Amino acid sequence: MTSAENERHDKFLRLYVEHEEALNGFVRTLVPTREDAREVMQEVAVVLWQKFEELTDTNDFRRWAFGVAKFKVLAFFRDRARDRLVFDEDVLELLAIEVTENADAYEVERRALDECIGKLGTPQRKLLDAAYAPGARIDALAAAAGRSPMSFYKALHRIRLALMDCTQRVLAREGLA
Amino acid sequence: MNDERLELIRRHVDGTATVEDRQVLQEALRTDEVFRRQFARYTNIDAALGSGRLAEAPVAEPATSLRRQAWMNWFSWRLLTAAGAAAVLTVVVTQVVYAHFAERRQIATVATASGVAQFFGGYGSLREELRIGTKLAAGDSIETRSCNAIADLTLRGGGRLTLGGNGTLRILEGESGLTRWNLTRGNIWVSPDEQGFVIQTQNAIVEAHGAQFDIQTFGEGTRLRVNSGTARIRSLLDGQEVEVPAGHQANAWMRRDEPLHVVVQPQPVERWTCSFSPAVQPAYGKWLPGQDSSTMRLSAAPLLWPLPKRDPLLIHVASLRVLRDSPRPVCAHNDSTLVFRGRTTRPRFVRFGFSTQKVRGVFAGKFETDVPAKKLGPVGADWEVQLPLSVFRPLHPQLAVSPDGLELVEVYALTVIEDAGLELARVELVPNQ
Image (cartoon, rainbow over the protein chains, first blue to last red):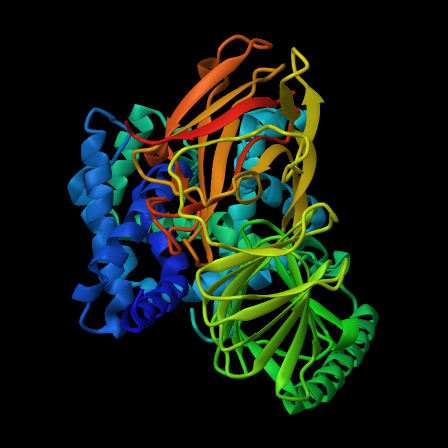
């Protein structure tokens, strides 16, 4: 790569890393599973880099990236046109607007999440770590713990709800809610 | 928000929703703005938990868990406050003293750090996660603890140094115009630096001024490749020293029957068949005799895969070093195919992958693909899988989105958590005919 290309790549890398989590949240809201989200994210990263030259204002990177991601999600669903477990385009559009327009709020909530995860008890934390480990399968984890998959899912659900409540309390305390 | 609706979101996020669930959910999302926000908050939390936020978050002390917090009494609160204040004071004093010390003789700054990487400051007195912006001075070490980790440093003299995965690098000295480093293990890539540069490995010393070069260390020795400028390498085994000009390389092996000599960097090849020779140390795994005396198999060995601030993950890995096995760089193309022959003694999916570097460049990421057990064939029987490189997904798309034109560093197969008795008998890269 020439030095100009290196510089462009460094700039892209900085912006991508800065906004990767927001982008991941955006994609995750639109697709049904984490595996799908991961697949779409890989495609999105490729297209963002390919089209990076078209971005005129780097301050607008997040919004621009969300727009690219939305099209990749739509393309992903078009490839799976027979899958009746995906949302209609108008619903995807509504969700995309929700996340794009409130991206700062979701960002703040993610930051508050660190504090809330830190307050989880050891069993809850271990359960989360296991469930979100790469390649984790809930049925295998549940079997190993001597529980039914449903009870495992429900325990996870309760932890997520507790974390959502906690993040709201943190934001309220800091006057951000 | 009623529990039934939240449960609906839960089923969607966990992938257990039915078609009917999805219809109800979709209608609610279409018509109810508050529900839409709740849905997005839930998926936002799920995405954050799944994308490394857990690894970053602190682990709770038992007394600060959500459940116990409400019951904390005044006394324990005061005690905790006092202990916290003392801890904060200690950290602040350490950091102020250390920052002052480090500022005085800073040699490099961390520009990029990814994967599991640690910083050991002030001759080991300080140990923390390696972060962008960390200033390094004499006595400091950095360690990349997984093969996909990298640490990219900006050097005082304007150059750059990248430490690849599973590497340990220490600054020995930097007071004069010359900086001395110790590469205990792993690979480094160095861009021209105004300062003189001396790097000691387990069996060689490399010295360079304004050169662009990379150093690979193996169990068997050290390889220096110079891409611009010149560098010198001296074998610690016998004191022999050679100058390596641009476009050349030298191998310093820890065997007296393989003398230090300079050769032109070989041109990359597009076809490679692993020698499966026990004379070449595998990156990971154990050599076993094959069905006849002329063949060997590489058996997967257990490995605890480090994860930041979490329990490590148990995997069983058989991994081959292409850089050491092949006398020439092996270049990947999207239309090439990796062929694996092997067997498993239990029906588990196998993850196949390879790591890459840019030709004469830095770590360029890993690529992986999973093959389900049923596609491998009967348990206990030999199987062969042919995987076009285009089916491998990039694990670091920000580094490289496809392996096209990259050099293979390692090729591996692994099973997650459970031991499936994985063995590899043949691995080859076949270009498109």
